[in-house]
Length: 303
Ligand SMILES: [Zn+2]
Image 1 (tube, rainbow, N blue to C red):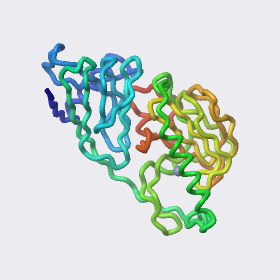
Image 2: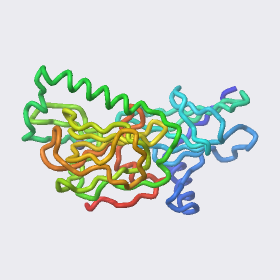
Image 3: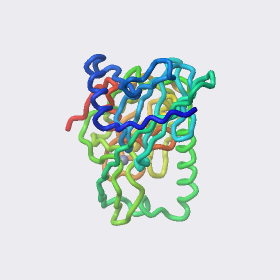
């Protein structure tokens, strides 16, 4: 038996979220995905916090012990029933969440419409030409960096530290937003997969949430001195162009722990932090995460 519930996430979900926000405050705001009149014995209902929009993060909560599948991929649930859904920069409009009770009872299917976003075009000139069009001898190093970063993104640790605390890595002017189509030295390149925060070289950079350092690389071709932190359930954050790194791979960090200093290493036209967030290979907008209704945020940017 399959029950299909089609939800228009716009008005209804927002209304529910607003109500829950008032009741629970900003610490944990969940909106129920179960339609009105949902009978308790029909099956497990799930709750979702966050806006279904491209490059956004949804935090779900369901009864512990059910199986949750998102677009046919099973996702990890915490002992409290929490699970994460990452909507890529170009996520399709249709999101399908399936909940399968352990007893083999009715499988429930939820559908969410993912809002699309328009992204800016950003032109950056004055970069060293070799960083925009690498030389043939750079390719092996670029490939090795890319493999190491991809491997770090695949971690699926049990411990989910995200909800224990969330901070901006540093305060400063946002000099590059997420998702922009980039024209570097006049040449079209990959979209921007994070946000840039301008700050003087040497400014401390903090871990956005607790987790384990999965990568601390001294010299990557594009990202320079680079730290990646694994926050559990496939969620990672990357901090690039650092001047110094203050953590080692395998180290456990709390939210707000200083992990390094702002620098200009790798492909950078000035001192800034590149801060990226991903759920496995889905790249998320850190600015949306910082406004997430389920996360209490600290240290909002200066602008
Ligand atoms: Zn950047």
